[in-house]
Length: 236
Image (cartoon, rainbow, N blue to C red):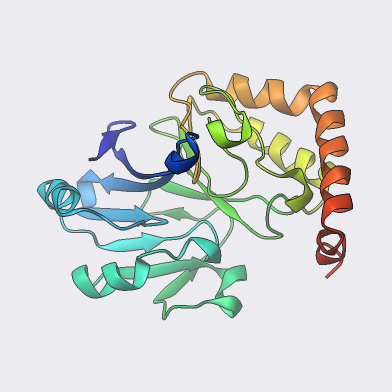
């Protein structure tokens, strides 16, 4: 079932963690460029037959864009189904696992609506978000998570599942802080419940709270203790 986020953005989700009684969402997004007959799939998960009908009632998808190469998901299947063009961030093209049609750059405004925002050195060394200024919506992939029972992030808040996977805490904090120059009300995640209103204030509190980052540092070091290979991973 599609869920409306704004006048041009819809979401669909899978539920993970239910077997552990810790259900949380994996999410994908659909963006409609109404005046150009364009329908964009973002990090597309599988769609049920009912969801396909819902999508096609809006229109036939024309493009697929990814926040990172790890969110390829069903892109190839949907490229074949709807003959979608696949667009990748230029810095991801060298590691592409799918045939793509063209690339985009940081700060490109795709189809006059979707601005590309590069956010480096958080969960991955290179990742992008998609900003819809007209809707006040920011879509991110693995940068951070919304509400998730499996790692104790309440709905309406944000955080990280495992800080040991962050490239560098100081760099991550600086990169997330850079998002505060954008004007957004809703923040949509690849994983976890979206924040539908007041999201910029939530992000500001998270970024500016020293206690939060001190605790993340403690958890990160504990993660390295349990899995020393992660520390070496970040040096590559």
